[in-house]
Length: 247
Length: 252
Image 1 (tube, each protein chain N blue to C red):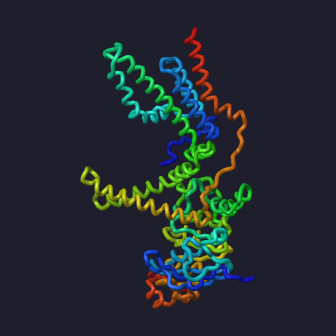
Image 2: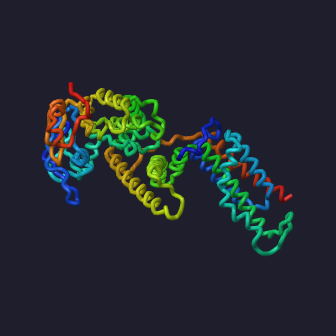
Image 3: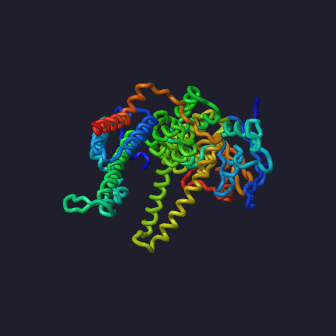
């Protein structure tokens, strides 16, 4: 069965204060794809992400994750959706709230009902994937920012999601941490949606990019094609860094 | 912050399970508090026993006494008690003191000091995290334990944020010197509150995203052998023994 990991149809959303954030978003992402979701500040990227696991209830349109409808009213199904959609938030301090790294990684799988040996197995595996095994018993605030970001990725990987969503994964990282994270993300066999305005990072990691601007998808193509279109980028407040050339 | 009280050592006291240590500390304090201060011999023995436990726990004495200074504001009034009051007076050196005041004051100072020292042994030999686990095992309402553990996790984050705001203020030439600067400080405190509040919401979102339904994971409880229990309970039991012996001596 070849079901898309993520299928969004005509998704529209307005905040209770009447501020409309999304005006009918259509997006389909196949299993194993790595897609960059680009867009200027305030384009509705975060709002879109919050719909993908049912934190914002879908008011218009529909979202399917691996064929399953995201319906925030159905408690049982939303629980499954949240284990399928792993979101890595921008600030690792928002995500890592347990006293130790290991306990934090265990938080998601615990909520999914894993216990004891099974639980510690997925925790060890997830930490192994991001190269943070030796930090299992350390409190998060003793780690560097890059290490915390990696642990944040592990906390989500431990839930064995269908799709991994990263919100600005490269922000505040030094060049080495940035590359290490890229290596880790590349090594994962999983569908990835990367929300960013770090265009070189999108180019490095994602073969496909979509631009969300003004609440709709305005472009959906090969990352290379999109980044070469200076006019398109400019009209949506996106710019390549000075001196950056696509080879 | 948060973990700075803990002193890492390998000792019997450090190795005991935290909930037993909490029980032992509370029991010890109860025994001490119920001892009448007139049994002053018992208090000397309690004090010696505490020093013994401190050395078993490999806590340096200077550290113990330095941390015990925290009680000074609390015993301040107790020290004044002998000077005010009524009734029978006694002459101590150059001072004319009230007998009842001396008894009540010295009782507060002695019992307070013993209690503070017990708390120091507990906090120096147990990480804050372990104390929370212990309280959880002692069936303290889970909500309170969760609030405390979130506080423990975020006190550093909020503290850093506060520090950065302070540096940013000072970089623009601000220095709080007097009342006229309180307005700025109050605004900064307000901003810090809003930021922490918003962080709380983001943390909650990230918890929901990982399937949070109101229960935090907790460790399965390990059973402790009777030997461990006995070792931990030695702390209050010796105090009880001191109390009883003192009573018997008094009777003779």
